[in-house]
Structures are given as C-alpha cells and as structure tokens.
Length: 410
Image (spheres, rainbow, N blue to C red):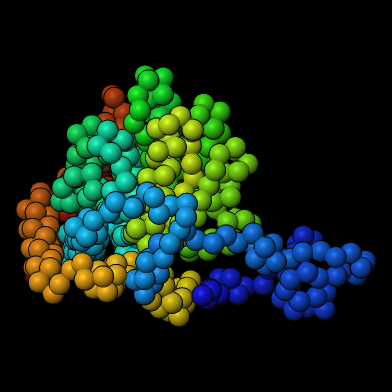
C-alpha cells in the first residue's frame, strides 16, 4: 500500500524548471507524449518499472512464506530462537519508550527513537558473529542490545555526561556516530584492514536513507568495491530523512545504487525479522568468503519522530503512519508464534514483567547519573585559551546565574 505524503503532493518541476502536475495536457502519469510527439517516460513510470519485490519470509499476518534463495539461511531456526527474536524486539522497544519518556521529563537532552525499526535491527544484529565488527549511526539501540551493550550505557551521551558509554572493542560495537554517513568510511577502512590481516570476520555499517545521499557513502562504496572489502552496508530506509521523503532523494530504489559501484544490492522487508536475519546472514557469508561488499536496503518505517526535537505531523499524514502500523514487526512475529504454537500466554506474561523491570532499571540508572557539566563545552577548545571563548564562558555563567537569582527571588 502506498500513501502519498503531503510533501509529495507539492507540484513537481520538469526538466525546464517549471512546476507541473500529474494529468496535465502533456499527458497523464506513465508514458506520455510531448508536443514533439516523442514518447517519454515520467518519473512515476520509471519508479514503477524498477520497483523491486521485497524479500519477505513472514507476512504482516504472521504467515510463513517460502523463498527459494533465502530459506536456507534460516532453515535451522528453532522455536526457542524465534522466541528470542521476539524477546529482543519487545525489550528494545520498551527501552526505547523509556528513553523517550525520560527525555520528555528533562532527564535526557535528546533521543532518537527506533520505534518501528526493531525487526531490521534485531534481525541483522542476531546474524552477526562475535568477531564481526559493527559501525552504527545514533539509532541502532537494537543492534547495541544484540552486541551486549548495556542499555543504560547508551544514555550517557544523550544526557551529556560522556561521549559514549562503552568500550567499542569489548563488544565489537563502535561508538554512536552523529556525523551523517561518515561511519560507512570507517567501516570500509576497518574491513580493508581485516582483509589484509587475513581474517575471516565481516564488518557491517548501518545508515539511513538520508545518509545514502551523502558523499561519504559514495566514497565508501567506491573503496569497498575496488578493494573487495568484507563489508555489509545495511541501509534502514525508514522513508523519511527527517522531513524529506525517499522519493525526493533517489530516482531509483536505494538498493540499486550498489550496481553502479559493481556489487550486489537487495531489498528486504525491514519489518520482517526473519527475512532481515536471513538476508544479513547471506550478505555476511559473501563478505567472509571473499566476495566483497553488499548493500542491504531494509524497507521499513520510522513510526515516531526523527528525534525528540522533531514534529513529524508537520510533514507527513496520519494515514501513512496507520498504514505502516498495520505492518508492525513485533505484532507480526507474535502472530506467527501463536499460530505455530511456539509460544503460550505464560511466555508473553513473563516477558511483560521482564519488560517492566527493564524500564524501571533504565529509569533509575539515568536518574542516578550526574548532571552534565554545563561549562565542559568551553574546555579544551584551544590549548592555551582564547579571549573569545573566555568571553562566551562569562556570558554563559551569567545566564546560568540568572536562574538562581530568579529562584531566590521567589
């Protein structure tokens, strides 16, 4: 189901730069004939003709469907492992919801929610071996969970008390990357090093649809292809780069971009945890076997805001969100577990209790963290100090003191 966003309904511009609308006298959407009589193809037709099918193993109703190419990569999965994937997604969502609430309560400065992207992250995260290395962005809370990073360690940076709360080498999980797209270059360099050292581990880099338009990503694609680096580029296409829809970022499906660099790409249903697991395992095996990089486009949806400073109601409609809500990744796997008799009510009740306990632990841990040092931003800017920084520090100190004066006045 495709729901046109409010942004997409704005008049588009043709090659001459003039605004035009679908169904004008020049023709309707699809193949059209211009004034010269030359048949031309509109963007909508180009996209329709190149739109790929998703790799899907579980339908939104939880029905298992066969896939000749990828079934083998999840053929041995057990009911216990399926329950484990479900548990991972539920606990990750609970942690994410608690972090969002803590930001609203003033305990965190900012939070980037993963709501709706649990299957993409848990499926790909559980495909990794311990010796594989992960380069995340700032939203990979589910992947961090899979790598054994304590959820409370993710929150120090968002509270402003550290620059990353874990040792990357302890979990083979790099620190969160705020600069858009740069981690793909880091991943490529690391993967090139793995290959030169003769290792058989793989590297995975996570990024979003918006980052796919960055020059850093194009450079990473070039270097990884030329050097046959053992890296998987995992793009979570959540449909919106903040307020910019994917259709305004690319004229072809994102997974097809890899073809121009000489390596394969595949689009997977990002709300299907089983498909994400299978496709990522396949891509990682290619990397370990010396077959070079792969681009995986996980077609999913960001159910919430880009970050807690964003208001998605300003650029997308509620009907779009509701359409994707029907494809909820957690509900999808729960339906499959129930229909297959792989889980009973006792399992779901126990998990609910575990979820609440996790929420309490996260809440208590954040509130026990120290308040950020408001003046740390002025330190270490210049080795020998700087008059302008000193002036700004003094202004900020006076601003902070004004709050204390106001409280004292009451």
